[in-house]
Figure 1 (tube, rainbow, N blue to C red):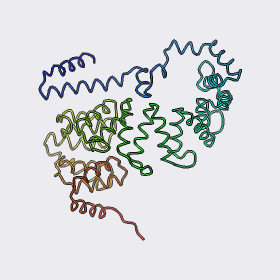
Figure 2: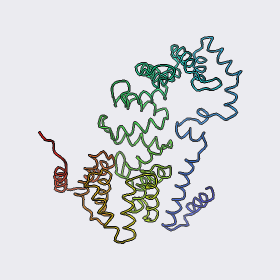
Figure 3: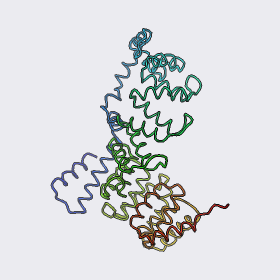
Figure 4: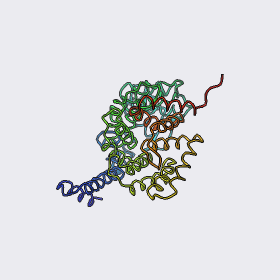
Length: 407
């Protein structure tokens, strides 16, 4: 891995490349960068995920052995029995996780409760987790929520994230996405990549939260910088559509490639299309088909449908018309994913179909109604390029194809 990377960087620095070779060298750099994220040691993974010094989240095997040694456990027990909150928290956590002591949920509750009564945020969080999961006693979401609020209000990032999850899912009896967003933001501000991602996605697509593409982009980019693969893909989508940031097809393709290298199936599918069409990258149909096959093997029905059309189109054989016919048939039968793909083909004029914004809008709108979030994103971008007359015709066709309520 190191040798091809060094060679590529050396060639780029010397500028001794034509356009095609430069693109190939950059591809090596990006692929290796993605690979490095995959094989990063635990310390680096902790830094990427949490945005903190690795030593705060990881321990060496020797440190783990020393931390769980009988004399260390004895010190923690003495501290707990002396009434010190930190000792009570540590002893309760040992019982909860089975570190240095046999796992015992009853004892974990006892000691974590004592520390929580002294307002120890970490103890409040783990006690809330026990109540939320029914560990060592009955499930009690009311008590879990109370404890999470206490810990989150003290700045505990894990409690802030869990409290956001409770509000987002309605586990406490009510759904409040704005409150969930507030706590995701709070946890994310302390470097929690998953919290940043969740906050960004709420702002981007949840109808119960005020939309802010610009803030969603900022949050998702922060999450992506901490190694969150799905955030990378969504940053790619926003950059390609010009939502929340200036449209930048090259940067969009770069983020898409990183996400694809990290195993995001949707990114593998999207990268395949970018390479087939030459959007933000040099066109490379063979490489595009390779990514579509990879996504197809991973279970993407979208990629399977698109792959059949793309392979036939690349070969230029009679299977293209048949592949497109099957795609249309699936779309007309109500398959939302097929509708999404048919719409994207009409947008670009691929798959042997003409470039037709009206038909593109119709199928993207129907796909969005069927729950395909990406269809709504493509549709919003398409609308910006359509004339008022074409948009009106498209909406009329959608109404004709949409079942109307009966009084």
